[in-house]
Image (cartoon, rainbow, N blue to C red; front, side, top):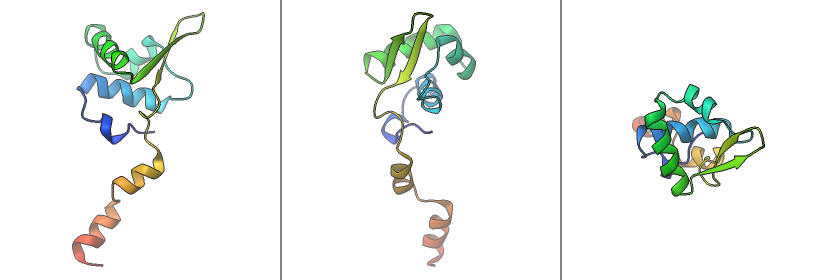
Length: 99
């Protein structure tokens, strides 16, 4: 899955967190799983998670065994909206050459 276009212009670490969570939107991810998926050390990951939580872009749930993070509603792009928002390569070629 992909991150909604309005959330793609974030800090690199924040975007990587949102992208990783979007890929696992249903099951969520632990902080340890995020550390493995995001190319950042804990000193960069922790403030990014705090900022995303403060802005309401991630949800944090305690499941008894630990903490699970999920993307907030609206962060994961609807595949149909992506198709409408970004033209395919074929559409770009058709438009450019007048087909």
